[in-house]
Image 1 (spheres, rainbow, N blue to C red):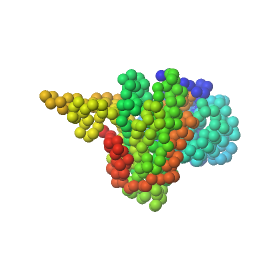
Image 2: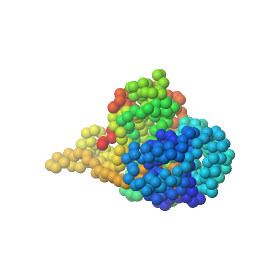
Image 3: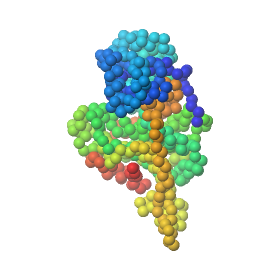
Image 4: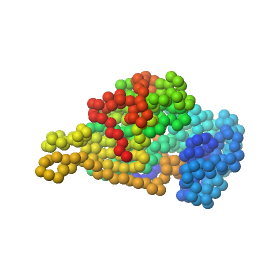
Length: 465
């Protein structure tokens, strides 16, 4: 599939707001280093933050970040990255900060402004860029979350569009940069055998699980403002649903892909309280930054329906959470059983018919479960998987891929305004009208009530590692 470039040409500078923060240290600096090694980052990189740092301290932060990631294996590339760096210290509310940035940018006419900052500061920085003239001809890369409900998403989009055209706004969801996620799109539309069965006539249900075997890792204050439904389900899992459920694009181009993804969100039936099971792991209230009487969910399971011709009547089950049994992400598309049971054991002992399984993490794999006959006179079989392990050695990291694409103006892996708002519309009715909060034990697969949610269609498929 050919790529569709938006904007005019390659960005001639990269500005990183929030360059002294955790996101820059953990993800962005290793991505920039990899981009320099590949020869795709050759333009100035200007860091902006309120911290009164010197350029020497920023250099040290970069080196410490790469050492922690174990990635310093090309000293000339590291030297080139450090040479590209500049730093502006200042308050985002102060026009002088943007004037100082403008002076360092000099003759740059197509900068890419990356907002690696808390969401509360998005509007402030975008308005500052517009007022200083730094939005003209530029791009803006906005780190998620894109609002915390439909109203705030609409307001953020309004402010962003007042300064930048939609084609120059790149909304990052790092999950879309994962190789395994992109492989869903490729596998679906590059293989003709799937299309005849990829619909309500043959698919019984779809499950998506995103588990993490750890807690909030000191980010309790953030999680108190977000929760699992906002932080994972509404964006990461919905994006996977869109790739699985979308119609074939009408033409070759990622603009067509985004059109079809937006239609999926628009066809999603709004969630109701009885479509949601919320859980909180035992001990969460003892985490730093967490309210003693917190009602924030660290686990969320949802039953979703897509009211389209292809998917009418097919339930989609999503679950995600902290402190679950393992760290893994998988998709299981369960097929309906044969219309006539010629053999008594045509369905496995676990009550499962054939299925297709996508493992998304910790590694990438695709498996197709099919029944085969055991040796002997009896017509007795067993379900086995045709398993393809897709190791991606040397693949680009999500942030490396997404930043590279934003610099070149390729919007393929970014989220569009209408899709963001349509996704928020689906969860709007359950953000504040909560279902009960159930406690679950760390190391489990969440509260037992999640099993009741799926009981009419079987049971959860726990990831196999």
